[in-house]
Amino acid sequence: SLSDINSGDIANIDVLKDAAATSIYGSSASNGVLLITTKSGVGGKAIIKVNASTGRVNLAQEPEMFNGEEFMMLKYDALVGNPNATPPADPTSLLDAIEIQNYNAGREVNWHDKLLRTGTINQAGMSVTGGTDKFHYYFNGDVYNETGIVRRSTFDRYTFRLNSDYSPNKYITVGAKVQYIATKADETGTTLGPDGRADFTDFIGNSPWGQT
Image 1 (spheres, rainbow, N blue to C red):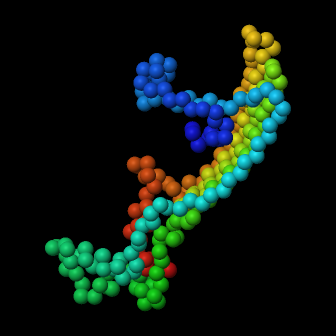
Image 2 (image 1 turned 90 degrees about the vertical axis):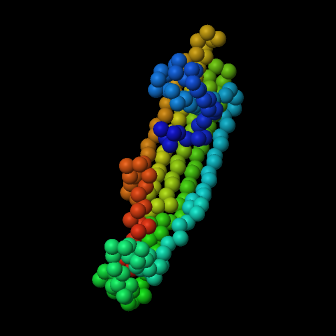
Image 3 (image 1 turned 135 degrees about the horizontal axis):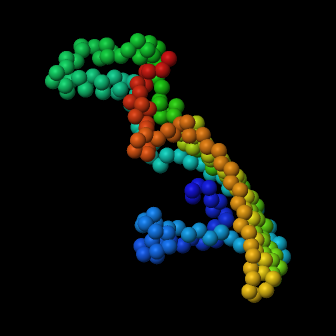
């Protein structure tokens, strides 16, 4: 998958569409094909490159959560608008035992803060390329660590690539492309629903007084 590819290894990306894709890859390529070419070595003195980056990830727009009073009135207004229901005189009677306990103690919880956090992305890599007129090599090692904005969601990737080629004459070229990838992901906090999206229904509908 694309998440297994170290972007530092990519030399260029070509997009094949329509007849160009299906003529080579058949009907499975009806939506198009991405051809990714990785870097190769160049002749000359060895060139060593080191790169590192770090970043933070946040929601572009955070949802505004109800506080306890607003949540209670939402439940109450739902009964007011229901012709088959009779709203109670005291809205607090709609609360369960735990909610009443937290209501009386003045304790509230923001489920947004319980579920989400500021994520981080850290990446570090080193590449070495070089060779002679007949032999070229490219080596790259990379470490990528990401903690998602949803708690208990992480992704770690370790990649190592070696591309080499040898041309004893203008008629013969032999080479090797070796890649090792190790990934580890904790997706406990991002379990997907039937539609392929994370289900935050419980998080949005939880009572701000619903935690002991």
